[in-house]
Image (tube, rainbow, N blue to C red):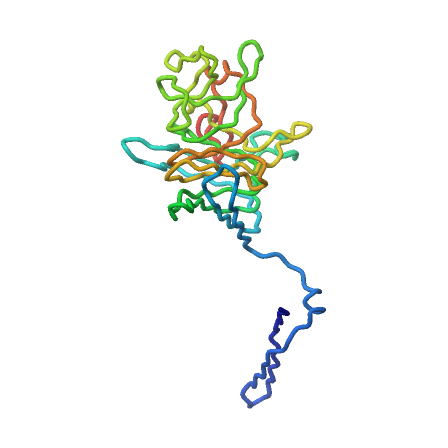
Length: 294
């Protein structure tokens, strides 16, 4: 079936002492004329169905916009239920301010006082539905591409932090989240460390409070020390476990019930440093209050 597009043509005549007259008529636009027009939709909607082994169907709504921001939030609590909180943090910040001249981030060199934005491209909202029961199983908010600093004083965390930790012998480990009893968990964790059988959060052996990790850099490891964009930074809200796919389909992230934050980072931190002094906070306010807060 051939579709016809229509344009709107209008001519307005103004004469002294005479009321304006408007003449308008819808006229067909030829296929040749339509072919000369280019553009991109502000919103793209994808329906992702019949994923092998995945019981959910997904609808992703992506905005074709770019965001560069630096923001501060005094207090965040999400998923408060049953006497606990899935995610609880104070002084949450995206982006920061360079403290010294010559600091390098995102492959650029900054002077003291320059704003280092958190970069986020193609923000999206995605819904997960259980077609068998016809109910919404969860939704998440994320970005097609993101990189930049995230700072916080986090007391409770549900999700995954893609940090590498280095022990005293130089061996690298994927960071593990723990509760206060040194039980590995990605639900309401309060500590982070190395799960090699020796961790003890009470004594500070290969384990440190999450409040020691005050700033990290979201992104993937790139060439020459430059942090590349990641497409796996998101926050999800699930009423049951959901296997979220990366926007490019390369990865699957298993998010449990409740609030789930996925923080991919290419950072490597010495475990002894994390325990003894922590990772200093970047400057996230114009009035620099030091490395421990703002």
